[in-house]
Image (tube, rainbow, N blue to C red; front, top):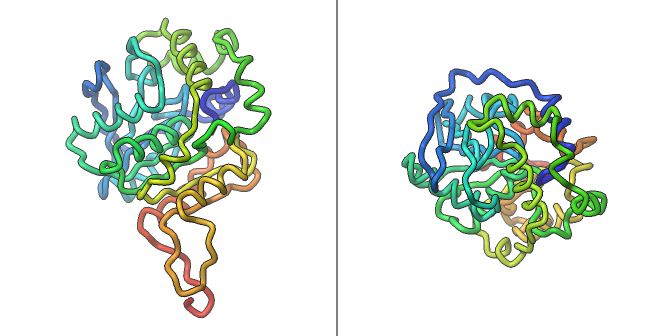
Amino acid sequence: MIRATIATATLLMATAAFAQSEPSGSTVEVNGMQMYYEISGEGDPLVVLHGAYMNIPTMGEIIPMLADTHKVYALEMQGHGRTNDIDRPITYPNLADDVAAFMDEVGLEQADVFGYSMGAAAGLQLAIRHPEKVDQLVAASVAYDESGWQPAFRDFIPQMNPDMFAGSPMEAEWKKLAPNPDGFRALAEKLIALEKEPMAWEADVKTLKTPVLIIAGDADVSTLEHNVALFRLLGGGVMGDMGEPLPASRLAILPATSHTAVINQPDLLRAFIEPFLKGETPAGFMGM
């Protein structure tokens, strides 16, 4: 997960706004903001959470693909898309509490959750802080501890400042939907502060009962070792074919994939996500 880096601009330039298949858009008051969301599809509920500086359109084709088999609730979080910013820091606990409050407002007692990047960390905190609300979690490009970031990213964080984003294609894309087009710098300051927010969630992750599908690129912002460590914290990494059922959590590594390329492979993402949400596992040799 890249919580908010200049590399996100590459994603926004490369990802065209995908025409949703007749989504129903609305707003609901959540913790002092007017949160925008779209509902599409039919089936079991699935909440989708975008990455930093992103919105529903820049999540691309994965949302309508998932809406083929699920009732998708795609959210735009604080200061993103059509949701207004408020006088409050953007933190992962705050974002998680916003999602929980949103679910209460729209009458969702429990749902599956798919989050990418910042949205994945918000989803992880949602499972930690409000476990009763999350049936299964798909976390793409996430980390549970700041030590899990690639050294190059850790070195880059102290250099980040809002001027890096001023006048960028990222800002131009953001302004297209923003309720306050002059608020980009304030948002960038909050997201840079989010990069510096301490992350040390190992103890909380160990207590999770929620099944988690971890998805990461093999050239993602989190290290491969960190993704394996997260998988092991959730009970994964054991040997199969020994007469015991596999752990509920899963790990998928996308080949030749950087952070910003993760969300641009919707067919591959769906191929991992759908069997996980259905509880399907591949058959072993001789049916074992």
